[in-house]
Every structure is written in structure tokens, then in C-alpha cells.
Image (cartoon, rainbow, N blue to C red; front, side, top):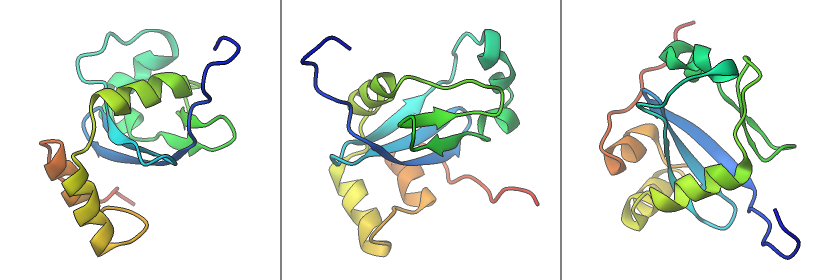
Amino acid sequence: MAWGDPVTPDLVQATWLGGHRIRLEFEDGCAGVLDMEGRIWRGVFEPLQDVAQFRQFRLNREWNTITWPTGADLAPEYLYEQASNNPVPETERERGRKKHPDRADDATLAAAVGGSAPSEPER
């Protein structure tokens, strides 16, 4: 970023929605979806075309982003831009917070972005 550009708000939550879609929520209240369906996968991202690999992302608070075991990560500014351009409707965010004040449930989030709730991970 150039000097004087605003700092990207902290990423506070990342929730897998199924496929190659992740719901992102930032400290300033911006909540939206990173949709990587149809992406051209190269380099450290290539293994992520397998949904089982893709869903292994983790929120990395130190770097303010999401990371994968493959070494892949995305710039915080890119994540914020994607969330801003593909927002979760306000009414859906509020409905989810009423059920659980810290986090909307996956079914509500998936419905808000036209998907279905992810299944529980296999153990």
C-alpha cells in the first residue's frame, strides 16, 4: 500500500461455506464472501482446487489473512475487497447474530449467499 492508504481492518472470522467459498468478517462490520469457484489454480494454489484441501484454511491473525498448509495465503486487501464486493446482506447478518451473538451459523450464512450449509468435518 502507498503511504496514506487506509489500513485494512482486521479479519475476525472466516467460515467455509462449501465448495471454494469462504465467508469473511472484518472488525469494521464488513461481511462478505470470497468465491474462488472457477479460479485458475497455479503454484501453491494448485492443490486447493481439491475442495478437501481448500477447506483446510486457517485464520492467521498475525498476518490478517487466511492461510493454507500448502503455503498459500491471500493479501488482506484482496480479502477485504472481495468481501466488500460480495457482501452478506445486512438482514442475514443480523439474523445470525441473534442466534449466537458472536457468530452467525453456517446455515444462515449459506442461505444468505445462495449455498447450502457445509457438513461437519469427518473425524
